Image (cartoon, rainbow, N blue to C red; front, side, top):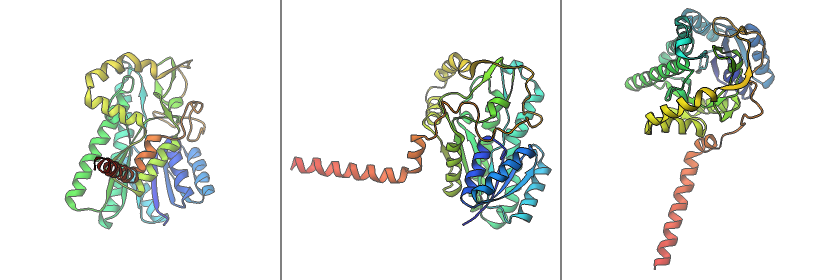
Length: 329
């Protein structure tokens, strides 16, 4: 059955990949982001894949604009079934080199953008007592790393917001679902656009995955909403390491992760970035790291099939027990 889905950050990266995947299954997709040219390109991709699309140029940092976009979506596409909060921005640099206005802007987009989108969704979903809100999170919502204080802090805030909202909806007995999908390092245009004080080109921390892996997880969360999903083994290991040995993780990250987030290629310090205005061009969903990016995750494959794999494991355990018991007899 076709659904009406709102995707913020739909003009590039993960949001663009999600929009295409939704179109391929025939959904009606509202595309929210700032860059009108890229939104139009995303619309063409959604419609070419078989879906319907509505372009809504909006800055998610503007709560009134997000609410107006939601009204337009319902007027032109129908009642919103799913809202995917995916818009993000960041500044890559040491804290002492980052300006207060830059921290504020990242917070307004990467955290408050989720709040604004969620409020618009709740105004429509709660009275109907149905709907799914997907928060696109990160392993960095659990474990902060150097050079990404602005982004990590915003993702930590978004996780806390989602957890509190989930409890409130459970208290109400609401059928509205909130699901968070925590992602690994991805090959998106983010690293070509991010504002940075570094002098070498930023990169995602390895291992790197294509945004289609993230899109698959987000669609899975739409169809099978549960509290949280952790995509790829690297996300799981990052979160576990921080829970089990946070001081060891601090030392390891201090020693390795500044270099791990840079290539050897110099960058122009005056290159345009996306922080306060859309960056030029339309790279689509992918960044410059396709040569190393993985198109699938074995850990995510197992996560989707955990019930089936659990049943197989239980059957094998029972068979083993029976075999051992028969030998003893």
